[in-house]
Length: 165
Image (cartoon, rainbow, N blue to C red; front, side, top):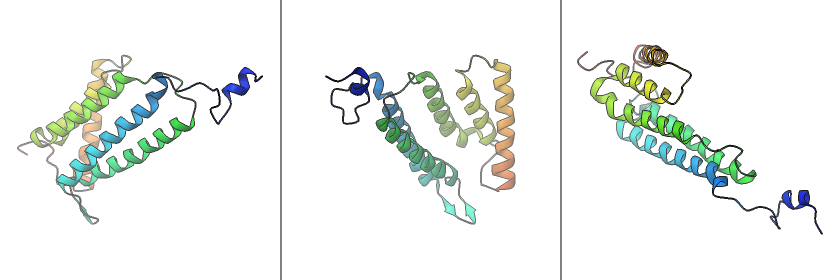
């Protein structure tokens, strides 16, 4: 007869618990991030990667998507090795981040980098109830100015800060 701890710790799975639907949350989250990263990589490729000495507008989304793809694969692998997730996934935060990325993708070419970044930060921070809306607006303004300085001024990427300018 085996004890309860031996059954639970059995790596071969002989009598151990099977993955419940909740236990697949990490793998599902990792797979969703992988799909999102592939979308970013395709979008970056379509925008044009440029050359190493003069990066195109699609280089940053492509590289970010590639890093996210690697990290999401690691998440899936680690979740399969482990005994499931400890907490339920924060689906509201995941949806806010996905929505923020969609906002940026749909507005950057229409209204410019600075306002698109501002909207992206505000949408991504919506689930955080501890930060008041004024704080979200200040955070959006700071990140927008930082993106303008880094991507337009320092890296000289061909982004328009505002449409019409």
